[in-house]
Length: 340
Length: 297
Image (cartoon, rainbow over all chains, first blue to last red; front, side, top):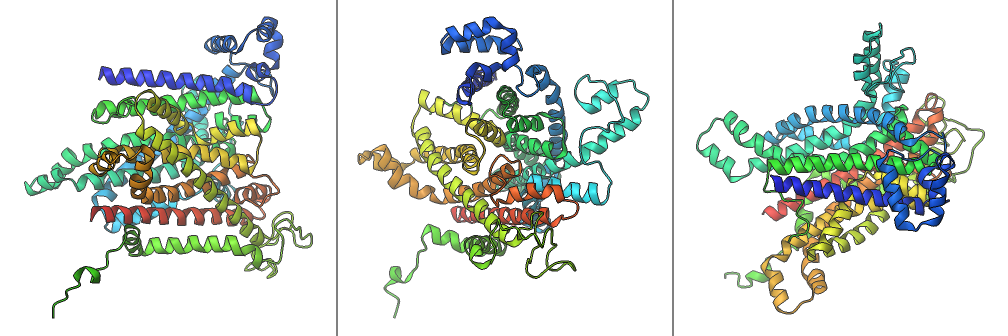
């Protein structure tokens, strides 16, 4: 256990270090002046000593200053808006996390049980229906799906709003950044109405992201259940005459869930891409929408900082899930890279 | 008289033939293959079939609905877009660009992935650890993020989008290759070849690669569907192919401003992407099941 945790921390640390080095190197690869790309124009004007340092030092010293600045929360200044990047990203990140969290929850809550049903009915009618519909579902381009939802639900039927997080009528003070939590914590008189409105805004983006994730989770679970059902110990349990509910809860459920977890960890990066695309379509004020705006504006400090943070979040989340799955099932040894 | 030439009479299918006969028994998979072949033929022959150019603007027929609509014209079967460009023509060219650029991306990624995978699978210690760390980061970073970084460095364009997606696809092939090579390296037939004095490269080319081809085909097919989705998504976000190019994602992005009065301009390119991805997925899934069935027999 401790060994696993140590390996996990080590791997996370190394990975984060590589990310920081990469983000530093990006400033050299981007067109334009390196120090300008790193911190933005206003930031350098405010700190003339930094400019002096930049002119006098070599790459290694520059990297050392970069790390110091990162740790102090000085992530530079945006070209486009002139705002400090760190607070801006921290304000946007909760919106993205909120969207991904709800989407992944819906996909898990629906996908895994249905995957179990399909797996238990392996190659029967229900399984075939589930498999073909999930195949159709995950072939959907996420941006097209989002546009279809907007066209049908928002424009034609006018049931749900098509963009943003909350109607402009409501003024909710910013606390955690998670809109539902913010409304819950605030003491405005129109709490109920605001909550209802926020939920209405959430439905379409969450649906478009979870649609595809759901199909992937269903298929993964179904495959794993089908594999477990073919093992000898299930056959043995069946010949011993155990009731099928006992077989399911004692043998199938746990063994089938084990390989699902690491496969889900691999889905996080795909999910993140989809969340970012959906954000731009629904004008969801999250980090994806912001990053894509940054690339249109060639806002290099913003791209560097946003990329660093999103990559860090994804890497830490994925590796934590890996670590969890390895602690549950010690026979998997994925962190042992140097061996073999 | 008993049949003496027993061995000559028996037909032993090669592994590929066996997989194909398994694949053929799945009607859905064959149908998917049919749709895919239809798209490929359309992508190749489409430009010859249509009388228009994808960029020609018919100013007398702007935002024409498809021919089955009352206001449609048989001249433009699938209607025209906001600039009066023929939809069907643009779909042909769009399919060509999206599908073929995806296939090229996957092929290039496959080559690099296999080479890296072999190095990772056959090496040990620090080198293996280093390769695996780098690949983990590549795999964990969302494709869109890689694309954004590459766009920031090199500028937008279809080639750069392909580069980004190729980079994101490489780890998949590396994983398949690495795991397979590791698994095979401990088997007896490799040991025999090793005792005969085969070098690592000879081991891979003559002994491991032939056993791996099928897996690579399955992975490559599934990767094509991802590449199609990603290339069109980048085109849609205006990060990949640029506005003048009739790429399917770009066409959807162009049609956004007239989405309310001309929804078919969004529906048709999206449907083309969807059907393409669906058929590739069905074929890939069919190939995977066929391969699995053959291995389990």
